[in-house]
Length: 364
Image (tube, rainbow, N blue to C red; front, side):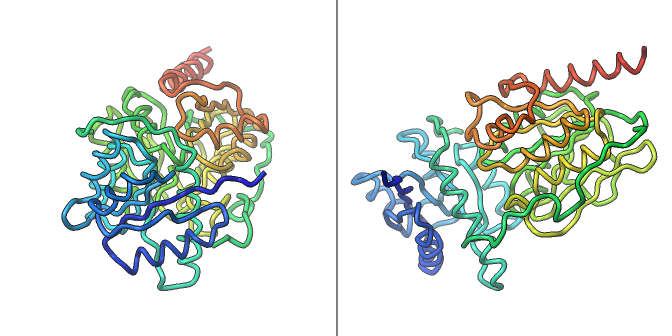
């Protein structure tokens, strides 16, 4: 039986960008280009005739901007939308407004200055489109090329080993998410009190967006949220977002945790990679860590979460019902990495219950 292709409508005012994205997506045997449009009005006329599985949408366009068009789509006939935008700091706020309005994912416009940049951007765009085709989208009112080898965390650090005597350290939470994760993370972090343990977050996101994402969360959360910096100490009541295009690792000096930001190849096709963060937590925190894997496509994080569990860490996964895409949690559950599967609204309570249980154990 032939697998049905993902039909895509590309909406961008640049003819060259439409041509590049048509070429990139058309190379994937699982994707079919339904058509292209130079602006939302042309796209709307096309949608009257037939509906795509996914729309790839620019933000800044003449006559009607992409954000306004997105809100109309999500209010009238929800279709999975991938925002393809230049990864500039100035455009980040608009991009997050698009996510809040119902967009499934954001990807940077493909760069053609180097072959490696084009290869990575092409793979990211294709993965985002196929992921979006599986996403659950719901109505919102108007207010609101192949990588040569799929590397493991071995490319960044060696496999973790059990320490004979692991010193008592503060408790630490590590969270990994991808498609649908920006809004899911907002729900989780906003619900946490200021006395929560330190939290390290890998959200698959391109460079240029993570700092703005952290500032946005910091403005709505009781805890402090920031983009992670190399060498900084991990503090309780603070969440650290891995910078786009760089791996984030947990490390330890004596009894204190600190963060390492490293370059390196994509792991599990992602940089930052959840597997890399989870492996570092397994090595340096062990049973003092809680790993949480949330909504996202693919299997990044499954192996790292299993390593955490084998070395005594607590592990949780978001359930299928509350995920936009139940890919990453599903893979982690299948390999035996997950102790408990919970709904999105339960994750903050799970974090604090685990944290308080550790405090009681330490006092005894």
